[in-house]
Amino acid sequence: MIDRDRPTFHFTPPTAWMNDPNGLVYFDGEYHLFYQHNPESAVWGPMHWGHAVSRNLIDWQHLPVALYPDGQGMIFSGSAVVDWNNTAAFGEKALVAVFTYHKDRLETQNLAYSTDRGRTWTKYANNPVIPNPEHIRDFRDPRVFWHVDHWVMALAAGDRILFYTSSNLRDWDQSGSFGEGYGCTAGVWETPDLFELPVEGGSESRWVLTVSVGHGGPAGGSGTQYFVGRFDGRNFTSEDSREIVLWMDHGADYYAPQSWNEEPGARRIMLAWMSNWQYSGAIPTGTWRGIYSIPRQLSLVRTGAGIRLLQQPFSELQSLRGRHLHWDTRTVRPHTNLLAGIQGDRLEIIAEFLISQAAGRFGFDLRTGERFRTTIGYKVRERELFVDRTFSGVNDFSDSFAGIHSMSLTPENGMIRLHILLDRSSLEVFANNGLVTLSELIFPPPACRNLKLFAEDTNVLLNSLDIYHLKPARFQIRE
Image (tube, rainbow, N blue to C red; front, side, top):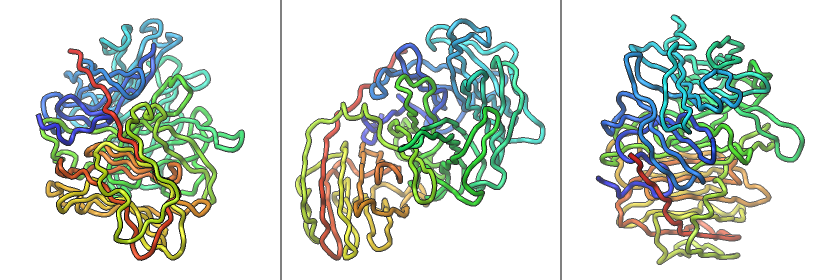
């Protein structure tokens, strides 16, 4: 098995193919993570639901496959809930998976249930619970949750999201629709999520609807957008105008995010598939393919442009911190490297820079060596944050992989703050407390482990810099 690129604290499958996260739910002390999985090959194929559990979102135990395809079709994406009140009559505190069957391009919504903490699953005898409407070809990815006194389903249907309600998970009525002409419609809409968050600094809250699109993403190919608005238990309305597109992530590799139902700390914790449909089947990882982002904690903040989403690394990640390096108030000069002699491919970097109009570009080169580097930089005059993976390593598997991905970023109180997570082939950048994020895959040679802090044109004032070497998480397999 080729494991030199396998991340050590990001979730990956033990072997073979993985894409969308599914069925994220917390129950009886365990975070359940299901995922789109082809156990027989490292390329997409007959979809199953793979399964893993964790008690801390860091260390994971891989469990046997939960749901297998059958005569009704492949097991496409969906969600899972705890049926605390036994509304579906499957058993007290049953876990219920709501998923899409896909067969001959027809898609229906279906149930399976478990009464033994998710270890074994039984498919509902009267599936489907929502049959295929003849006029909708792409009709999938049910996101289900309990709202006040009924179940709600958000379902992707071509270029919009349909909403359904139910009292028992078995019988569903359509209650609304959102999306026609809103946001990015360059590709088919997929994998919705819907949740409520408080707005920081006040007593108000808003609902957030996340939607992945197969084409038209900010870095090319697939990507994930979000909408902020209100939900009345039956339908969602956006408070931004139709033409505004809000991207969750401006890198190339952040797709199909889902959040945990029943999170015990009442946090909204989300993770996503780190890949892009332009090249997902070709990335050079050998006998396995598929990486998830770290879990991210979400919040809402008011900005001059409206209420916007913040994403930050989940707090439990700090338990992996090892060796710590710290600098205060340093001047970064061109043609010098404060980080000379420091190496690592599993790092957490937190940096604050004071911005002057005289500065040109500054930032970090990671995984450097030979002729390779991945650059995370900021252009002061353009007020633009970017990741350049043109020379990051192996990239000849796709014409769409190499390149520069960028996003406008305005200094806050004259400062740019970068929070960077590097895990071998996984790179995640959180800027200004997570108002902007960029997630990228990179495949440098193993020997490329050097770091560089650079400034171009003029000096840059580094207010503070912390670098943590991170310990690996634990992954166990139970047959």
